[in-house]
Length: 425
Image (tube, rainbow, N blue to C red; front, top):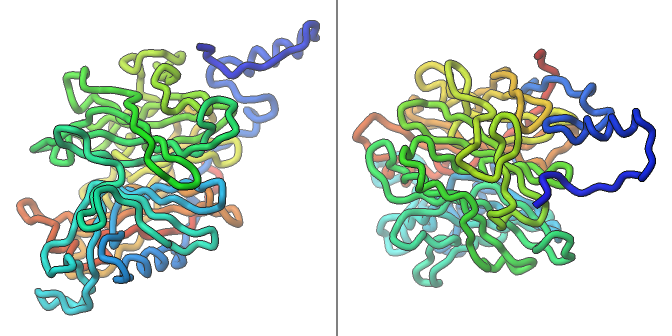
């Protein structure tokens, strides 16, 4: 399998041109005319995007159906060829919204099942948005009377969380397009692994335009890594560039608030082909996932959250993450950035910070924001659309379910418009 996209050169070429082509092909080198243009980028300013926040609130509050989305986290998106948007969520509430007051007397809308029982929580879902921007329907599995996750739970227990997705040819060069969704497969866990032990990265294939789940393939298995904290799950971010899809991931050390970031690359049309994945080891691309080395190593103020996002910002690469180095609870409240001139670094930062607004709550000190995700399909007037998730992380021993069920604003994405500016090296 070739390690770089194929290209043709003339049989006879001038030496300077040949040297330029050679330099362009070296790992980490940029195409001619772009390396010199790469400059540092960081958060410059931001404002609330009420349109998208309100649309998810409207859709979640709609009780026309009681088996569709009323809240979730994860919040990834991909634009489909016909202009629709597919939004992907991890843990998802499927239930009915009740008017205030809650059974505890709080003045919030709250969740309950149709028969008045506990809300339905499933491990994932997908929501379809029309081309004009209106949310229209929820995709789940199971049956109409017993809806399940859209991406079924793994055999033997555990969960699948969808992360980044991409529309690509069914096979390289094919006219037919499909949606490829990267999934995190986690086994049941306890203690520091309450959200599950990392098992590996999978890729689901969805048909177009019907969005039928055709199959799920493991691409990067991690169960052979004895220490779960060193297992890398890929798909936190995926950026297409120069015939490749660069797929970013992170490890999950339970003793540290920060993770290290890693990157793999896959030729266009081959996300579901495990043989086509290559992993950056610090000097070159390797076939073996076990040889991958971090491109952004955690330590001190550096590191990424378990979920982060990467986008191209002109010639630069820009990474958004929670400020994991922030003292106390700041790491679950503030967003910061890193930048690089190539996907495998070196990455500079952290630099810049924004503290997203949180919905009102009786105990705001326990309201956390997390999972900053960029949605480049909605870039407008030089501003990125950034979503973040909102949760309640109370004192130890206090389950969050009552809070999340009692205030629907606590488990829905919120959106910002972010403008970037220059940053020093």
